[in-house]
Image (cartoon, rainbow, N blue to C red):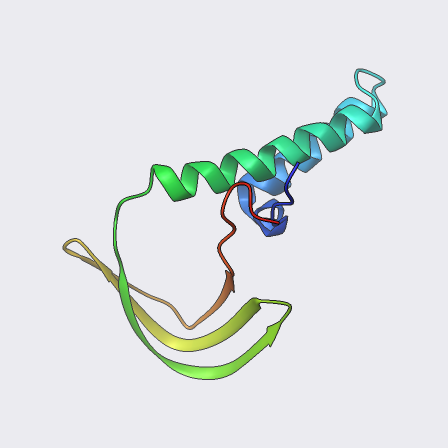
Length: 108
């Protein structure tokens, strides 16, 4: 089985899943091994859904405060970003973007 990035676990849906799995483990309804299998499936499913189902394109403009790269994972910290997609604009004070090298199914 190929490896998937685990950074979606830090999203609100990922954190909710982890909290729910922790409760199920604590109550004795599932064992930790099953919880780990569920998280691995979550990693695969969220990556697949984002790559095949999301079709909206966005552009953004911001000031780059900081960036770094480690093991093909880039992290960008932006200040005063403006994101534009379709007919909408969204602004924020700061945004952190984590970008990873795309993994092709079957590639090692």
